[in-house]
Image (cartoon, rainbow, N blue to C red):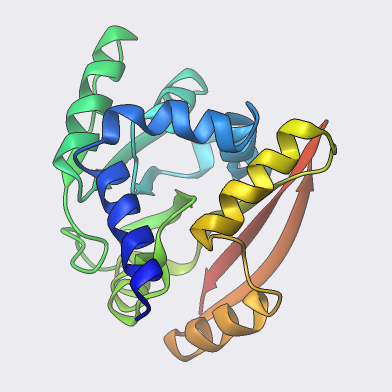
Length: 216
């Protein structure tokens, strides 16, 4: 691994752990305020709460999507490996009067029984989400025909000085999606008996990339 890649990975590790308290501000900056809009793209692919059963969220981060789920009537359980993210999410949910159902755990070792969930969601995950161990665990805990909904990326469609600055930041961090991302991801997913479908969700000033994985 190149030295710069190591530096970038270290920076992201800090963002998800020791510097987790800056995550909301950083995500708002890099999306010019559209981060929450991109997260909420999951609702385009979810049935009503009465049809989902208990909904699993992987890598809940600072808990913003958990607030959205509660406000829309979904029954959820969420996990994150970062203890710092867990503490931030707990406090945020308590302030909203929402009883948190959060677990500290790894996506590569899910603490759930087989065939437990009909739907799972994950927004802007790190590379863990397509690790073979994660995919094996997801296949185990999802019901037959269940779906995993993943918001992979967001793209700003307006062009101005701010978006150019964001482009520079992404380029420096080497965090742009590769042109062959769909091919790479499909190659990882298919051996784990998930059927991927790719989607583009258009918003007012941006769009988000979503992949849904149907358990075979």
